Image (cartoon, rainbow, N blue to C red; front, top):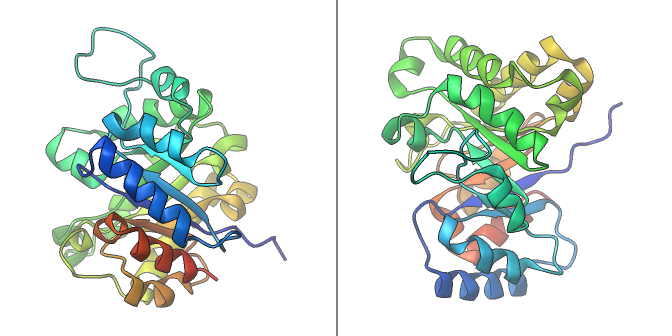
Length: 253
């Protein structure tokens, strides 16, 4: 029987919170989290708040993640941030391929093919986001879309590093809409994603953590997180309240 994967709950603040608000939030999160939480806990914060979040998290197990990065280490890419810049701030990980980046910022599977290995090479834990739109789900295209996204983004990752990637399944139709995938839908999609990793490496498939993201809240977290292949959650709106994030962490227990 493989060892149980440790759950991971990451709060994605999106474009919220100033430096001052970040410091206040982190103080409250540290107060309400138990000393030994039943899951890894992370916050994915705007670039301007990364240093403040890292400083506030010092001496705790809370991970601090960026919300994007460029695949190149440096260059003429105005407005972009590189992996070495994040490493210098002592950031732990980075969200890559979030559906909002794909929708509004022209993020492509081809760029992710370079971003994921670049993050790993820099010592950052990538949180790779994948998921289908409402049209794709209603058209029976969920598996085709997930297969393309997962295989493309992981193509240049060596088999021995596949298990170091965190994958977040975020059905686009459930992000910020209040519509939530049922526990069965989340389990089915995440089991399929794990099987795709298993096509490359059975060992990695057992080790890789696959999270659910899409309107996760304290009142629906326990049912979703109880599914055998769901290893945690990438939490959007609910993560803006540290008490709600802590309640979702508690649901992993």
